[in-house]
Length: 414
Image 1 (cartoon, rainbow, N blue to C red):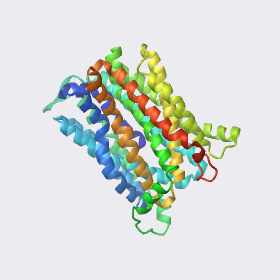
Image 2 (cartoon, one colour):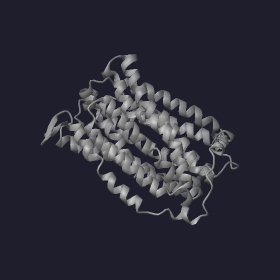
Image 3 (cartoon, rainbow, N blue to C red):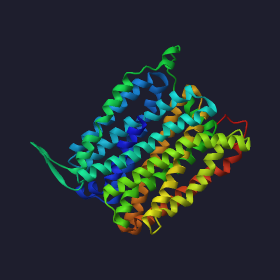
Image 4 (cartoon, helix red, strand yellow):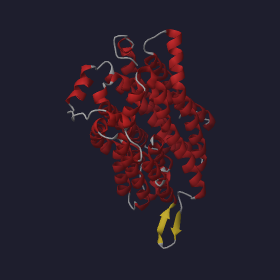
């Protein structure tokens, strides 16, 4: 499910160039499609869906959401204008916004406290399976169906190659949706029905603990901003700077994303255990989050500037590995800090922030620098380096000054 969401979300990143050429777009509008299109409906839908996850059947909710965005992905094949494609992305983002609140709530109830790191690592690995799978499968389809060409499909109107890829990409989601709808939320159904609670306690908690939940949420947002700035423009950068083909880009970036992301997400629980054993700290997840934030900054900045594409990919491996640790550990910290009655809605607030700033703003920020500061599409590597440097600095400024508070034994466990 998490894999599927990022599979569908990432297709636009791989297919950005044929989409740009077909509709005659600049980088700024492509950045809007890749990132900011998700922010509009994400902000509107995340809290209501988090509210439903706090009070209703979470498996049923997840099944309906997966079915909705899968159908919308396939409908992208019918988009005759950029506005139609953008609208489909906006609506599908609304459906995706309910995934982490509901799934995170389920996991946190089954694996409380420090036990949550490994399950969240498995859950977060879906990001890298999805992103990497989108690159690999999309790249393979691009080798079979040229995304830049147009194809006649019998009596149907001719479709561009990238639209054919979108058409088939949405179909597996209907199978996943059927499986989710067949499950029962036994933990929720075994409890006495809870009355619907207002949003006031959610915001009261947020602003009562600005040095804990808010600090981690905002730092994690800026780290996601850096990761998105790199990942969303890496295919276009490899194409423009190094002259690689889309299928070649998909193969390399997809394989690296899956391998490094899985190593980071699935290995994060093991690293947390080792930090706890060696340092005896009560907050090993916080220690790991801070360490990876420091290490990821120079890697992200150097990645687009190196002259060799293979050194670039090596740095991308390191960036994806560190990103996997950051996502799995960061979500685990947030879930442990959140009280159970408001957990899904608090995760929805975190999701809004991560997607609005980290996911939506980053691609647009890179595009704006390329279009209006350098005014040259081939200056994309410099734009990426500048934006990631600013994002990395912001993350460190938010996170490191609060180290003493976050590591205090008096704060909730992580």
